[in-house]
Length: 435
Figure 1 (cartoon, rainbow, N blue to C red):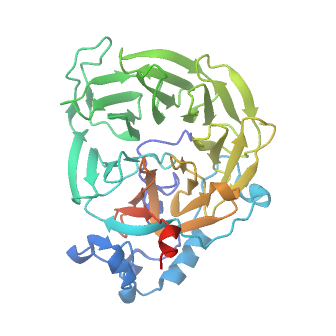
Figure 2 (figure 1 turned 180 degrees about the vertical axis):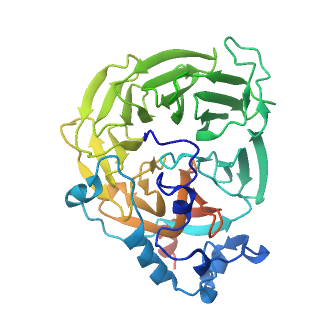
């Protein structure tokens, strides 16, 4: 990742926090409106009646939504480590038919405020069921119940966090005021990664924090991404991708690192194949890697992207996977022929910061740094898509394991942060036949 990291809560290192709020060059007062109780929660019924799903009162704004959208499209500054990578990659992108409706708006809340600590890292929202979602809000790990519309603090990292269980090499000294760069929640395990190699692990069915460790003493030891998975034996593990060029496999039954692989560049994201045998590795290089997950040996290099990559995900079919890059593209690869990507997908304004497949493999969500999420129909060969259009930096997205819900964390201190919830649209043709 960019060496200019630090505690950036904005979207762009040159402009810091202000860039996360607005990129159209307009004055701060132009759209400044306070949040009221009436707009704290927005429902699908409210939207059908004409309300904005983020609660933005366009009727009293000095500009229209369409005009503001155009200014964002024209003025958003995509961050590139390789100059002109976005412009040069445009010609390769396959056009997709817009206008599909796979996920419908269900609810938004400003009761929880998703936040971003590093402008390139956007994996800070995780859904464990269609009703339960975990996210970062400043120094707090929060749980939000979509059923009761209530939040609960799971871990407070503002103060002193120490482990309460005895394990070999547990960092009993703990950590103070730990800003979180990345988050993962799966299989009843919650893991946070910090800017200096801090790892904090909590089992959701246990009191307190189970395990703390510091993965590296490297000055540039930020944890870029985490991937929780189960081995065929049933043991629980997670992968930690780090800016010190390392990828570490943690065994959470023995609470130890069982594998440590080293690469030629900082590792920004890793995703494991469904069978656990292969891993897609992307980082501070235009090229990615497909490696043997047990030995760390390179199976194949991935050529095609023009800039650094920060996202990857496997299709549950185990044959294809996707990588997201700052050249504003997502490339889909087939393990049976890795000489070139099978399709190149483009967005509207910026880098592809996050990719998620539904557990049934029918849809893939491609996330830009702000304003747009593209949901592709995988079975159409990615030729059809739904485009979610809103305003604000995206802290993270997550499909629920049953595919019925999609949660989006929006970090925007101008329109206020919010958590958006969408529900899968179902087509029950057997009901039509009875009418």
